Image 1 (tube, rainbow, N blue to C red):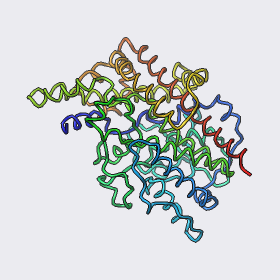
Image 2 (image 1 turned 90 degrees about the vertical axis):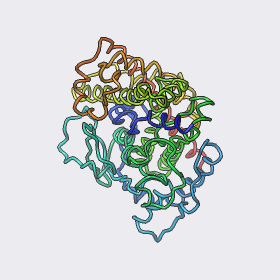
Image 3 (image 1 turned 180 degrees about the vertical axis):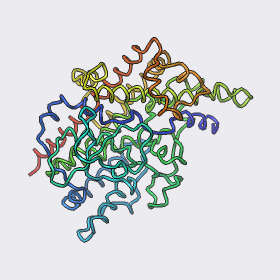
Image 4 (image 1 turned 180 degrees about the horizontal axis):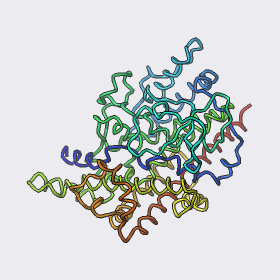
Amino acid sequence: MRLVLALIASLLPALAQAWGNHSPMCYRAFEHMPEVADAPPVTAEPLADFLLAEEPAIARLLDAQEDWAREHLKGHAPRPDALRLVPDARRSDAERRAAFLRALRLSPDARLTLYVQIDAREPDTVRAPLAASQVSAVANGKGATQRFVALQPGEAVAPLAVLASGCDEPDYGHDVNLFDDNPGSPQHPSYGFGKQPFGNAAIAVGSQAPFHMGFFHQGRLFNTLARSFTRTFAELRVQQYGGLAVLAWQTGHAYWGWRFAGMALHHVEDLTQPYHASAAPSATLGHMIWANLKAQLGAPADRQGLVVLQGNRHFVLENFQTRWIVENAQHRRDGPLEQALRDLALDGRYPAWSPSYVRDVVALEAFTAGPRTDAAIVVGAPAKFVSDPQFDFAANEAVLGPELARDMQGQRDALLREVARLLSHFGAHSRNALRGLLKQAAARQASAP
């Protein structure tokens, strides 16, 4: 069983990013949604001001969320009582911020600075760019597409910009090194997550995998053989950030309402990506076990192929989608991916937003789409990128990305249609989640004395 676990673990991507840069897609997904497009500008507010004004209410919310998670989330790791947020008006801003991050069990290095990520459709701004290190605790990879500018306290900003920026933010180091066996974890007291259940515990960015993936639909045998893979915390993050968004809207901190909403949506959106909802879309568990057995008998080619090709196809899908969206935005043109992201007609085909929506609707749909997506990548992308187990696309992504865009196989249109299908799900689920959060905020405000 240990060998099977090792094989399954190796199939996961080294980095836990699902869609690359979420913000360009979120600008398109929300720009025609009336609840966002018609919302009035909000006032940029430092996190310290929100925490100082609402610390008692935030503390009550986080305690209630923890009680709910212990009762309803399968595989939840209870928060140590020592990490509870206890209001203290005598704290400094820095101490209050640190206590807030501990209570959420986020990295103490999370920046949460005032910024927006500029829409790729907008020309280079006259404002000075903000260094990525001011926004993210992890270094940008080669070919990163984010463009940041600083916001000043009190500055008016469009909710669309705040929301779309927040949609990418959880990839900026919020969930890095939170497990007991991560190299960086000694900088904070035990967060109660235990040992990292899957992913590469020795790689900083890889340590965020259990917060951005959810293998909820692999089946009973998989869950028995790989029980640790059922320990995932994406649903926890959705509930935490979503609850903070509702509280912020209720209490007059609209900037943080839209920003926390974006952070919640990030984890929903990650699970629309088949490689984040399935341990291996291209292989059954039986095939994985057989490949591992053959490797033990001296024929490792099948196992090596599974490991390399799984990662290559994930990265090719992400690279293809990101480059298409960003280049179209820079040229201010629309194509099938942009149209799919904006397609509001799909929203009503799903059930109403609820705490189980992430698992039972989003992840199930992505898991089911896995084999079809994998097949579309195989026939659509250059064969050496997706069918050669000796080639590591991730190690050469920055150099070979343009070649991928230029040298597609004859079935590129099939791949484009499949990516468009996935992005229509991305847009619909993002909007449904946001509607659910806005509805909660409105209902609670209406019932307030």
